[in-house]
Length: 85
Image 1 (cartoon, helix red, strand yellow):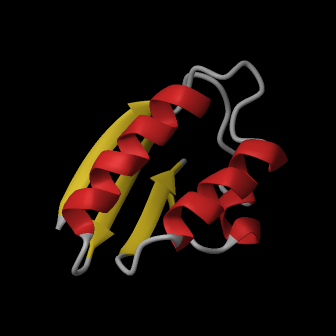
Image 2: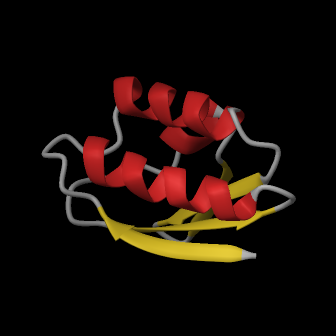
């Protein structure tokens, strides 16, 4: 299992456009990705679940990646968060 934390810097937080891109990025991997924030967990491959976390600017998000390609997924997702959120 791989895990990392990221503090959201996007002024709007995790809104529809980056959330959709995040789901697409996660979907490229076989590993299970769980995104946690605000005391709640969401399946990273489900847009509605991600949006329900209510992630705003300044909040810390934790991503847990488990599976065959977790190393590659963790690296790609860290880059995604830094570039988009």
